[in-house]
Every structure is written in C-alpha cells, then in structure tokens.
Length: 591
Image (cartoon, rainbow, N blue to C red; front, side):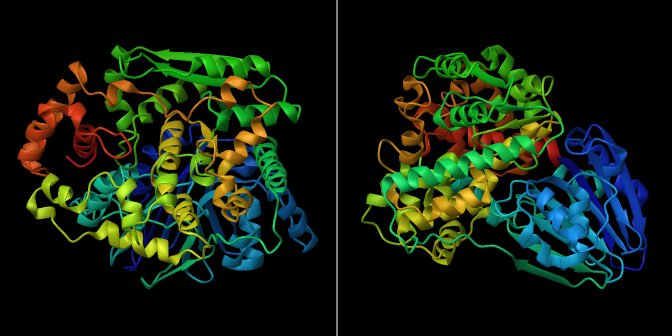
C-alpha cells in the first residue's frame, strides 16, 4: 500500500512540481520507504511507497512504459497478480519487476479499462494514457482503498487523502456540503461517495472508474455490481458451511502469500479475527504474530476482551502482543489520531486502531483484520430488527439504523444547513438498486458496498496507514462477498448473527470465543462521556472557532450537555461526541 497523488491541467499549462511535492508530504506516512514523481505535458503524478511486494527499485513508482505512453501510480494489493502475469506473458508481454504494480500497467495496455474486471484485490490507481491524452482513476469494488479528487475548470487534483489536496491548493472550496452533513449525522459519520463534508473535494465511488480528458470532459462508469439472489441449486446448511469455510480459507491464505514481508493479525478476541488466526495456523503459518488492544473499564462496560484473545493466542500458539491503554493516555492522543483522518469519523475505536497500529508497525508491515464480517454475514443486532419489521420501504431501515431522524437533524444544525431528508431519499434509491430476493439481502448488499466503505473500512485504512502499516481484510474478498450475498438470512441471523461463521468455529476455536455474545469494540470513555472527556468536548464546542462557524443550534448543544449519557444513538453512540468530533476535524483541517 502507498500514497498516490497527481494533477491534470485543462488550461494548456503544466502541473506545478511544487504542488505535487506538497501533496507527497501529506502522504509520507502512507509510504515511508521511498517516493517518486513523473511529469508529462499536462499531467503530473506523485507517489509515496510502502514496499510490500517486490522490495527492489524495479517496482518503484510512478511506473512508466515509455513505448506504450503509459504512467501509473497505484495504492493497494492485487491478490491474483501471479495468474494475470502468466496470462499476459503468454500474450507476449515482458516484465522487468516481479510485483503487482507492473501487472496493472500491462493489463491496461492489453485490455484497457476492461482490465478492472480481472483485478482481484484492493486498489486505487491512476493511469495516464499519453496517446489518448486522458487520465483514468479507478477504485476497488468495495472501496477498501481511498481516492479523493478536486475538479475545477482549470485542473484536476487527486490524492489518497483530503489533507494532501487541501495542502496543494488553498483555493479548494472548504464550505460545508449540506448533503454530506445530513448523511454524516444520520449514518454515524458515513458520507457515501461522491460527497465529502467539503464542497470542493469528492471521492471516486467504489466499483467505479472515471476518465478525465485533457479537454476537461469526464466519463464515469460502474464496472461491478453485487447481486443478492439465491443459487439455482438449493443448498443444505452443511453445503453453505463448507462453501463459506473454503472461500474464507482461500481469502485468508492469498492475503498472507501475496507479500514479501511477514503478515500479522489484529486479534480482537471475537469470532471474526479468531477465525483468521485459526485458518492461518491450519495453513501452516509459522511464528504468527497477533496483536490485541484494550482500555480501562467503566462501571457500565468492560474495556478489553483479553480473556478471549489470550485464549485464541494460546490455542494456536501465536506470538501474542497485548497492549493496554490507560484512559489518561487516550485523551492526549485523540487529536493526533484525528489529524490522520481523511474525513471526520465518530467511531469509538478509531483512536484504538491508531494506538494499536503504532505498536504493530514496529513488528510487521502487514496485518489481517476482521472488518466486514458483521456486514457480510449479518452480525449486528439491527439486522434481525429490520428482517422482522412490518415497516415499509426506507422506514424499515431508518427506524433501526439512523442516528437522528430528519426532525432531529433540523434541531441539531444551524438553519443555514437545513435541507430535505436527503439521506432517506438516498438510502431508498440504494436499496431499490439491488437485485435481491429479500429486504435483508438489500440491506446487507448496501452495507457492504456503500456504508461499510466510509465507516470501518476507511477507519482501518486511515489509522493503520498513519503508521505505514498495511491492513488486509479477508472478509471483504470479492468471491466471499458474492457467495455470502446469495446466502439466505437463516444462515446468517440465528444464534445472535453470523450463524454460518459460528458453525465453522465450533470445535475449531476455543468454546469461550464461539459461545460468547456479540461484543462491540470497547472504548467506554467515548461512549459514557464524563470527567475530562466531557471537559474536552465542551472546550471544542465552545471554542472561538466553533462560535464563528455557527454549525450547531446552541439549544441542541445545551440539551446534550445537561445529560450526555441520556442521548445515545440507536447504535449506542454518543450524540455529544458526534458534534465534538466533527468540529475537531474541521478545526484541524480547514481553520
């Protein structure tokens, strides 16, 4: 994984080398190993490298094929690149490097944009086609890798994070995007592409590509869609269990084999990450390193899951590392973690991933993580609520998921940001687009392809890459997702959710892990807001910057402050923390 950036001019001028360099400074932690730039007429490309596959200089970027007029910057990993390489060699292509970057370049030379159909992995990349005078931006199927851009009549800027864009051009429109603000406060900080919280910055949609021509014209197209239809052949429960186990095992193994550096596992103690450890051990992985993080308890909630992660580590004889974070160390590092967020995030565990990644990056350069299992296999408590609900349409979704109904949103923000219920309208359209057999199938498909992108997936990418650590997510493997989407709800919802994963785990994982109830990453200090954390949020919300911005309705802020613990979202997040988190991010990035 790496950091990428670039500029394409539409006004017959050349891109500024200084601008590319400024963007690269804001991508340095994503790629600490080396850096490079490329300029050709109207285009400039920049790259910061995290060397994972083919550690030699032959795989350095930007990667250029002068004879074909192509230049590439790439962030991610292509897990089927050995097979593609062999196919391309059979077609006469010659390779100078042994990694996946050159495979993308040759695949584009052979198949054009149709090469996206053949790439299996996580990726965001840009290819400059000098012969066509056009720039291709592309993003993987479920948006594991980020790709932001700013587009005006004079130029296009793109980068792996928003900070690089803001640092490159002081004139980017930093006004709040009202649609994004409504999404943010309805969907616990999720702002689906193409929007971001800032009007002047957009992001490439997952499973889409965009082609920008030097004349300023743009073409956008979806290259993959997730369907949720049952297979023609009726499968038994054991058939499903066997199929999912085989697909997950393949996904886990390909994510450890495709690396020229050691790969560890972030082990929470839940079924998801524990299965990753078990399947790697079963595959013969030696000296497997596992990592867990925990926090201090609160009276209402335990702050760590070490009893479970310890049991898994002992069961599979891993080299286990536990990291306990005292509460008095969380607050001083909170702002630091926020400075690495490409977009504002509300999740309690963002700082946890940030602090854990700092420790893990000293041991390995690649980790596997269990993100996505709950969304793919129906692990959250709101899925059965939706499945059993008699409500109709988008109300069946919003009643159990939205952080705030539209009326409360209007109460939350200043009247300058009032609008229609754009989030409900968007969700209705997304749910209707899915080719599915049942309502829950639609929900899970939208979660996997849209909502998860801007919550756990983005959080893991941002917080790990802040320390030059690559996170791989086997549960978001394309083939596994497609298999799970075809699976009926009765294979997902029983036994508290993720039924098929629990059946795979019986007799394979420690009983204590299999039989435990669903837990959520514990960070009590940001859920039960009190003491110095409450003081911290007050300081942000009553700062001169917040008063000048006038983003929130003062009466709503005062209402939450009177009793913060009484105002939690349907998914048990602190509404007060939501307000403070967004204001903190804005102060760090646009003030």
